[in-house]
Amino acid sequence: MCLGIPGQITELVDHEFLVAKVDIGGVKRDVIITCVVDDEHPAESCVGDWVLVHAGFAMSRLDEEEAARTLALLAELGDMQDEIDLMRQVGSSV
Image (tube, rainbow, N blue to C red; front, side, top):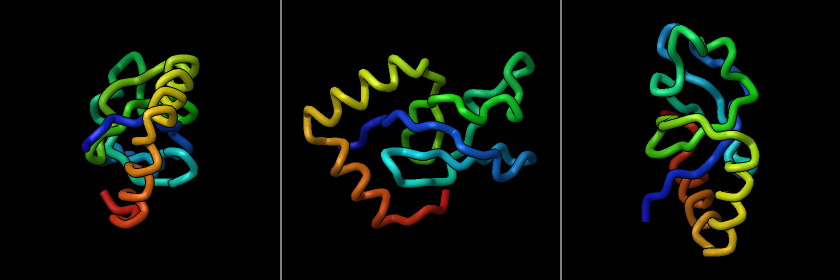
């Protein structure tokens, strides 16, 4: 099952290609952030943001409360650990 999982952007890795390091349940992964930046919210201001990550892309920004609720729900469903284990197997590349 492919899920979007909340993660927090910890650093901007590549400004030109809009790649950021995102912490997803303790796993740090490079993620493309093109969908969550714009003129009003440039890449430099994304560090610390919570985003919904799917297939190596940050699909949208979430507030911290929404991210926490989603993580709790996924944990309750038992799917989050499977997704994190899959990310560990795939590695940290985009």
